[in-house]
Image (cartoon, rainbow, N blue to C red):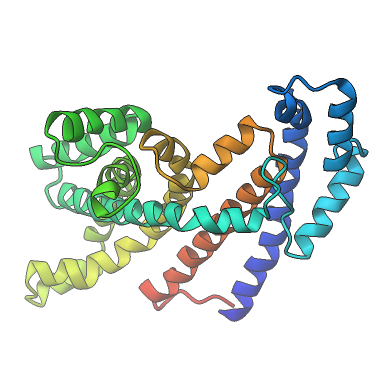
Length: 307
């Protein structure tokens, strides 16, 4: 197991390098100059803009900037923001807890809702319950996050006045954005869960368990679910990556702090170090979550062994 984890982490290094390299060059290909944006409102002269570019290191050759960026990353330094001159690591550290809070809450809702819909649909195959569960799952995953978020605000905040529409605070501020993201991610989990349960129900060990006289709930819980959850774990890992990306829209819509708002502002201001730092962090979390999903196979199925 440890050797397998070591190999996966070794493969993750070039993956993270490729992602950050792509973002580095794409940000510099896009139109716009950070120095001009920073001095646009003051009406600064061309000489002032040139001096600022020199101070920020933007006048250096692109490969020199890239080499300095890689050297800083290897030292664990993501640089300083071009706009605020604050360390990028500190800025990310201030916003990361809010994003993780939203992503974990949304993932919990997605898992509970997706597993329940998929299980009920499989156990009532080809009935109205199956059709209803799959309709709910497909509808939830098909609606854009910004659209369902606006509907939630209109219904639960403006209409019923149960929950605050925007802001940061206690659990009441977290309910709507987490539910919106959770519903959007539950559809794929529900479909995979239904398929896995139906496949497990057709196996011989299920027939043997029933022949022994085990109650149906024991057959489902002890034999069906444990095997059905193995492929579902992969989908859950992939959906967590989607949730991290979905926070960009959700945090903006509900006026929440987090990495989503941070990277949107950084892109608008062409703040290269902040964008590169956030992308690197999100990619690292995505790789780690998928590694944990693979390792969970061995916990769910003792037959699985990693050499």
